[in-house]
Length: 154
Image 1 (tube, rainbow, N blue to C red):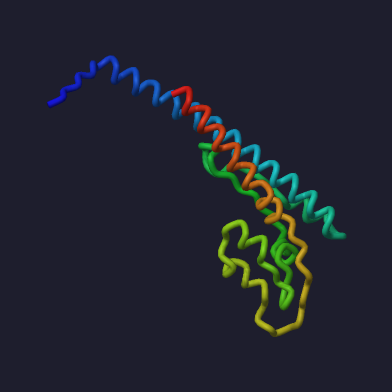
Image 2: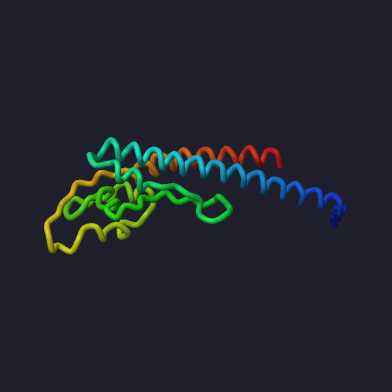
């Protein structure tokens, strides 16, 4: 039989270290998430300028903001009611490649194909999802680095 005795003050010290690790890691993860959210915002606006002729109104509708109070969830969106039609196209020209690559189901954007009542086939000019797809691997790399660095300190 092997018996281990751990003193109460040692348990308290480990618990205190874990709490400190959790807070610091969370703060650094939140900072990286914010960094990526604002990078997606900036890149989406650049994509709009490159790909569309009437971009002033659409750029003004692209926003980024934290969701909730913990800064661990961010929202990148375009509030223009025609955003999805520009992003995915319409009719026979709907293209969901960027959407699916970002991990969203294709069914999410199929609504923009239309009912076939009118033939409106607009070429997609994606702006938001290419920005998301470009940033995702960079964010993943930075998050892994942050967590590894914090784990070493623990």
